[in-house]
Length: 327
Image 1 (cartoon, helix red, strand yellow):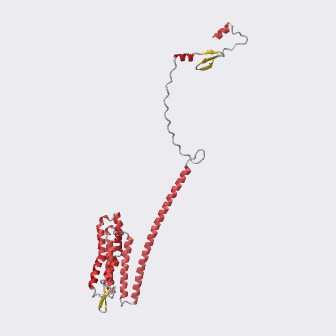
Image 2: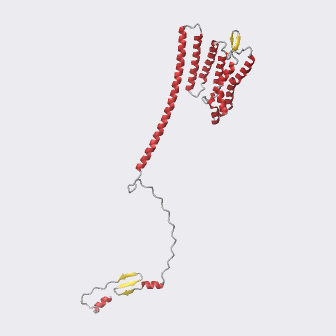
Image 3: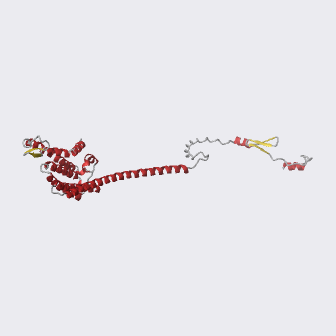
């Protein structure tokens, strides 16, 4: 609600001020003064309600909005950098430097003074209007060039140039309105007005187009940078896939090593085996001679040493052979 009301008052400021001033502007026709906005109303008969409504309306709308602007800016002077303050009142001070945050009120006051000159000095004549406007605009141009309130140097230069072009146009208009000015001077004045305004408009259009082009160029550079980064990421991923080792079977990259199997539970300790008894040892070492020259034991069967060979016809009962056999 605050933002809506502030913006509406800012936009309708000049219209309200001009309407309030038009209630106090009169023209003289046939020796009688009539209201400039409505010639059916006589200023002599309705002076009470004209000034009773027009003056308070001008104070409230014309000067009051300027005063409210200054009061709001001074009230939030310490918090001009906060997000909330900038969202509500940022359009009043955002374009200006920190030390010139109040400059928008000065611009509003200049506009109110110009409207007052145009409306109130209309019955006097164009000459008086032009001279007063020249003085006001020349002073504003000097102040603008001295303080340079805008953050952008381009905005400061354009503002100063527009004020000086307006002063030159008013001066040329004064020469054209003068009946004593020759035709040559009138042509020169007309050409100066056309050239100065065309140059101002051309420079303004050039700077606007350059700003738009610069913004578009910056956006294009950002897009190109993002495209290069995505291309590098894609190339890196392809390179990693190419350099990955292949499986022994040739079926593509080797699979990641499987997780180590879970450790098997520890086996229960074996029960101790009872040692052999004396009888068992005796029976295990006892051997029985079996037919066929084999010794049978509990530990297994192993062949005996074969007897020495005898010559054919020799008797095993020969004493010498028996001794050898005994041995």
